[in-house]
Length: 186
Image 1 (tube, rainbow, N blue to C red):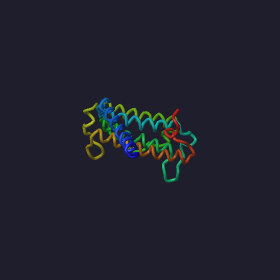
Image 2 (tube, helix red, strand yellow; image 1 turned 30 degrees about the vertical axis):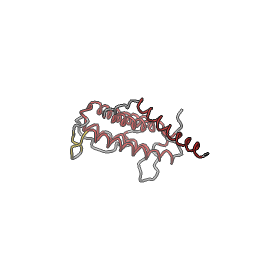
Image 3 (cartoon, rainbow, N blue to C red; image 1 turned 90 degrees about the vertical axis):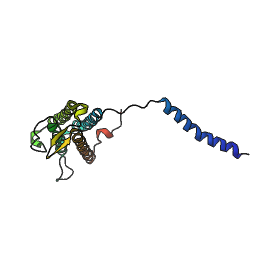
Image 4 (cartoon, rainbow, N blue to C red; image 1 turned 135 degrees about the vertical axis):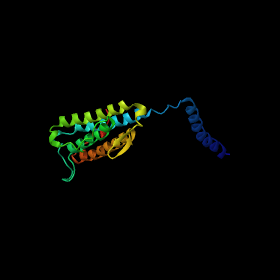
């Protein structure tokens, strides 16, 4: 006798959340997917925001910090990531590819110079994406020794910047600092 009420309570406990979830799903309208242009632009701007925040935040006296002598310095990592953006921007905008992969540190002597270059490279990339519009993302351009879609090149450079973001997180930690994205939100 005592088992029946217990069993009934257990069955009701499991049945109610499923029924409540089904009712909530019916009431909530499913949002349509964002257009591809918005998705790629948001991704581009987000990694740009993260790298810019690091460039602005990292102490200038540590800009030449290297975890090992064979690695790039913090400043060189930023210059490499930002410079690589022009491997996207230039072909997409019909310009000649840049000659060198990495801008030289002696061209960007101060933290302010590097911050400005990082910001400009991401702003130029965002402008290139916007200039193509939704349909232009599928356009092919000459990229190196082959043709590639604008969208594919953009995602490749977003990934590249994300890889360097991850490396810079390690630089922060080795320097005894906490990266901006890892700090508690206010």
